[in-house]
Amino acid sequence: MKTLFLTLLIALSVLGFNAEAAEFKVNTEGFFNTYAIHGYDTVAYFTEGKAVEGEKQHKVVWQDEEWLFSSTANATLFEENPEKYAPQYGGYCAYALSNNELVDIDPEAFAIVEGKLYLNYSHRIAKRWKQKMAEYIKQANINWPTLGKPSEE
Image (cartoon, rainbow, N blue to C red):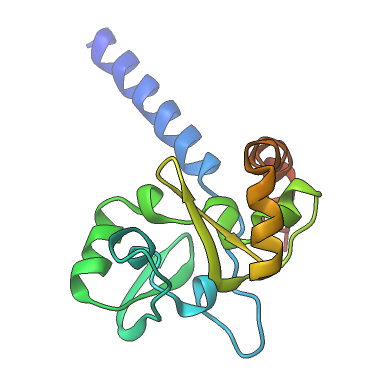
């Protein structure tokens, strides 16, 4: 009985830690935008290698935000493993994060690096970001835990 209690206690503490760690801002910025990453299908970046707009009938709620997908299959893939397909830094500009700023993105300006999706403000910024990508990712990873915290309401 004591072993079962300890096992449950450890499991709950681990689950609590993971749930709290996953709560970061998600980019829903932009004029008249209410969807994560402007309503683009985050799975399509991986499966089609391009930016594809999602559709409202293929909507998934994750991290309190609505994500759109171009197909039921992509929505299902995301539901099964959202961390695999979600963009880094909540879908904010990777270059700006390296400069300690939260900036909106152009969904067409993206790169997949080591199985992770990075979005940028524009194609021009994405080109600059790719020149020192490893350095910018390292710095953005340092900045994100502070900048990515949801604001207290």
